[in-house]
Image (cartoon, rainbow, N blue to C red; front, side, top):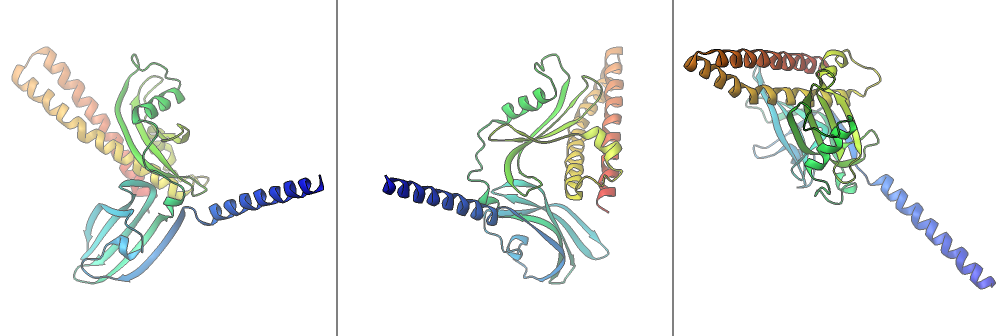
Length: 284
């Protein structure tokens, strides 16, 4: 009996030790955000941002914005993990033309592989979209105005620096007034990780919210800006088609369709303009 108690006691100690060890390891080896403040690197012609930051081949950086200002090449690089964009993770490089010195600032995530065993989502994009609709109380979207749908697989990083495979979802709806909801939906469990309204964001959130982390504010703003840019880009051919039909047919139906398209495009451009001003403000 005493031997049995001893064995049970030691067994429980072993289990507790393993639990503690696993918890300790998990807390030490997990996703980590690295901030870079105007660091200087000497590079060779073939070197990439990834090699400068000593990241493995699962990571990559793609230039999403390139400018040349007073003889200096400025690039904004979005971080990717296994070809999937990482939320709120980008660096900016500045390099004088003809120089082998580059200055880098911004922030990126390393150790994502500690949180993500796989980058194959359990849920489909369509299932995640339905979750977003239900979150807004939209059970049946057949009679609802749902337009300009965007659905993209991302790596979402929460405030505790835990990485999740998630769908970034946005769309336009006019059920209870114009709105542009944005969601991050866990691609494995369906949990809503974050959501906000894009139209509200560009009219109110650009008054910098001290309670909101600036990295999150910037990332939300860029998500809204990209969505409104794609909306304006995709709708422009619709306006061109309506204009051609009006010029060719010159009847009342084509005139009404042209006027509706012109007004709609003006509204889209106004939203994009507000999003752009918001982006400029939060990037200062």
